[in-house]
Length: 422
Image 1 (cartoon, rainbow, N blue to C red):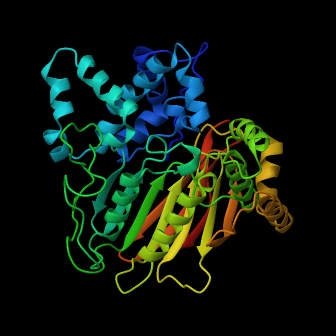
Image 2: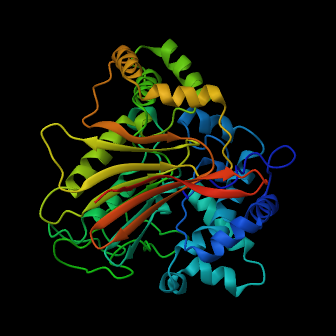
Image 3: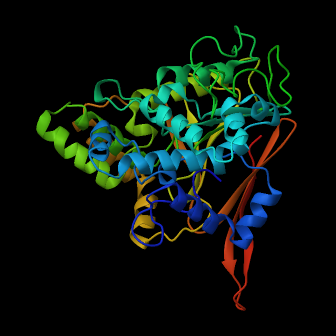
């Protein structure tokens, strides 16, 4: 369930304004009987997306400048970060991490921890690289990396990136730790050693072995799960349009096209990994490296939501054959009502004519072809649905179930697909 909780920027009334209103939205969303049951019975690893603060959060430097010029943005942002830490990020920390977290201690030591929490949120806003929201969990021989693809962005057009340099270095360290090709990550030292989620001591909770890591040698894990709220692999037409738009906004065709590109970027929500071409390529290279060699896992899965439907896409690299099965698993699970026009658009986006159209658009932006190719191997599926990945040893099985209404008005889950990945 990646970043598909209730859209917090569309509450009852006009707009959420402060911390108190955020808490009421969480209460409204999570006290739904079915959601409450789910969160009480299934362990969760959460990471935010734009709707945890505001729609299109950190789309671009120009967008952020416009937000900062308003009289409501600062309170909105701080309140969003504070409530996220309380309602989601605390649950991402292990008991040992909580015990060592000075912010957690400071909040608990006073009757009202607002001042400490607000100071932390202000620091996260002023210097995003000083706070790491991403984290790692090792469950037996399955490694889970939840990656912040919102607050960690670099927005300046001339060096635009989905992850700042420290965050990118941290991600590589966590993926390669235990693969036997160099030092593993070091707590509080080296690239990416900013504060962990909510930490004030400079140590990231994700650093180093955790939750059953084997700690050394090749093959430290059998399955690698990379959670990023925004899909890495999109329909080809959408990918090419986002790459073209990035080039336009970066001035590839001059200032006039750059202004038009910015308007299109905001209006069409062109802000996925493909809208950050260098980051898209870097993530692809890292995944291919992690999936190849004697220490490769059985599967590498990128888990995403955001796009209001579900699909499976599988990449391939020219002249390179990874040893692991690699897949983009995308599922926006609940509260989905996608208009027919958008459903048709997503279906068309995977077609051969759409791919040809996308390449023509990309050529206008002088965009280099991506280093990785991919194809859709499942979906697109629309509706309220749950995707389940079952891992046993080095085997992996994928299942998708959709909510369907019975004649008596009750709802049941119906199996849509059930397949082996490894």
